[in-house]
Each structure stands twice: as structure tokens, then as C-alpha cells.
Image 1 (tube, rainbow, N blue to C red):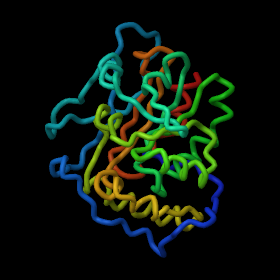
Image 2 (image 1 turned 180 degrees about the vertical axis):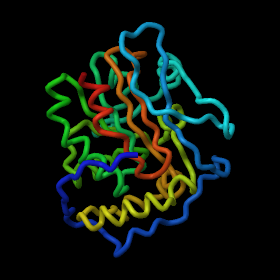
Image 3 (image 1 turned 60 degrees about the vertical axis):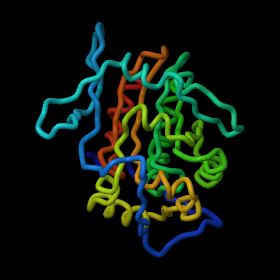
Length: 255
């Protein structure tokens, strides 16, 4: 896991902050007791001149061989999944890359300080992406109103979508649980971000849907398109703040 590139700190006016980023104990009754595992998924396709970029992943069984899924399987799992833009319009998630290439970031939740840093990291490369004709989008497991608040606070220039039912997260089987949220690495990274000037939005973090479900959610990054089944790269965070190497993302989207 590489250290993310530095971003310009920003202060968010009017936000509620906490002297130290303690994280409330949350639990989703719909999920079983979590275990720590690595969740990056290599992808196979029938014909390709260059190998797909991926990060190895372990399957559910400890010590078993790496899990492999085809890009068609991944795309199929997302068919029927909808996200919502900032106007509240429902959009099939596969439409984000149906007719173009896109880098799609999946945030932990809209108040997450780690996600705000990742959003800045990706936004710092947006000119490179745009020059290659690549769109940048961010999806968060929350409401449209929470997505609007995130947009206003971070000034993120990419597209922002809400997934209030966590449908895309469930379909992609992103990591979830206490043991993937509270880790020494995540704690040190949060302290570092606070020293850089980033802040958790505690009002968003304590919204009922986040407290009841979203607080344990991990995210990732997907590069896909054009074409619904053209999944080029996927990184699944194995723990909070598990940023991929940004150069790997750029190589997948812009080479």
C-alpha cells in the first residue's frame, strides 16, 4: 500500500469538527461478524494485448488460491444497480462507462476524512484524465442531500453520485466490518490528515443511515469503459484508507 500523494489542505467553513477523530462503534445487523481480508480482484479477459492491471486478492478461505473473476461477471453483478446524481435522477451505474472511459471512486461515506483526501488525490490528476478523454466520478453510500453537502464542502470537480441502498457496494463485494475500519494503519493516517488540515464531517458521519449501515463500509476504485463489460481495473480497499498506487490507476485509465 503506497503513501498517497500530498494534496493541498483545505479548511471547510461551518463544519462541525472533533478534537480527535474518534469513530463511533457501528454495526450493521444485516452483515455477519467481519474478518480482515484482502479484497483486490484480478480480472481475466479472453483477448487482450496487454495484461490487466490488478491487485491480488485472497478468497474467503484462508490460505486458498487467489480469487479470479471475469470482467463480464463484474459487469453482470452491476446490471440493475442504480445511483443518483445531485438532482436526484436515477442512473444505471453501468451508464457511467457505457460510452466513455471513467475512473469511479467509491467512498466509505460522505463524511469520511480519508475519502476527502482520496478525492483530492484523484482531483489532482483530473487534467491528465481529461486530456485522455477519461471522466472522473465518485460514488458514496448515502443520500443525495449528503452527496450535495460533500460536493459543497470539498469542491470536488468530478461527478458525484449517491448510492443510498449500498447496492453497488454489495454487488462489488467491497470490504465491510469493524476489523477493516479500526486498524493501526487507518488510525495513523487519520492523525496525519488532521495535521494536514483535513477534517471529518461529524454531522454527515452521524446521519442515521451512516450510523446504522455505512460506518463500517470500505470502498475502492474502478476503471472501466467504453463498453459496459470493459472493466479494466479494480481496487478494493482491504481496510480504511487503503489507497491504491495512483500511477497504477493512471496507467489503467490513460495509457
